[in-house]
Amino acid sequence: MRVKLPALVKPENKVTSAGVRTKTSKRAAALLASSLLEDVELVTTEDKSMVIAPSEVQRGRKALLETVTKDFSAELWESGLRALYYDGRDDETLISHKQGNTFHRTTKKEHHVVLVGEPGAQYLGHVTTKTKEGVSTKEAAQEYFEEKGIETLGLLVLGCDETLTNTGWKSGSTACIEKAFDKLLQRVVCLLHAVELPLRPSPLSRPG
Image (tube, rainbow, N blue to C red):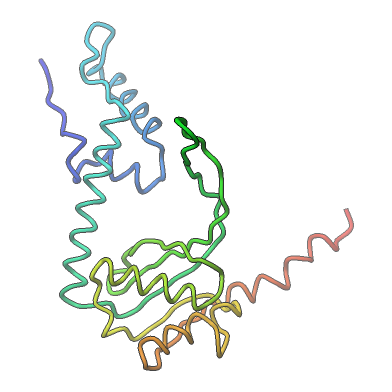
């Protein structure tokens, strides 16, 4: 008897959502799901019609992310952005450029800033800044909000770490954002960086 499996392209599929949560590659997710079907004898040597291909997992993830983004956009339109949390890091980004009739891949170091919004602890997206300076973070975030149509008039809180790039009184990202919105915002500063700094040299200073 043939058992009909739920389509992976549906956002509610558990294989799709579990793969996104655990950061599993599409090939690994397809292999694990197909192996499970083989264990319960839905996939056999004679019948391999239910084997899951990586492309199915990829289509499912795309549908899931589109659904989540659509629901989140609707929530932001209703309530507006109340709190913005962000953090940046340098990443080696893979870039494809055309030279003659062929494409070549190179890596380029870029500064990416992740944006998380409240209410709902929702992932807004990430932006690439021109420099690590606070004004670049402000400009990139503003452009992103305008592009996505996210309402920021009700913004009350900014969350970031305590590095000088963020907390500088004149050119820090928090100061630049406050100047852009022409109002003071409640700053929620993470102090974990300050706590871990004194502990860094301790393992190196111990004998053995």
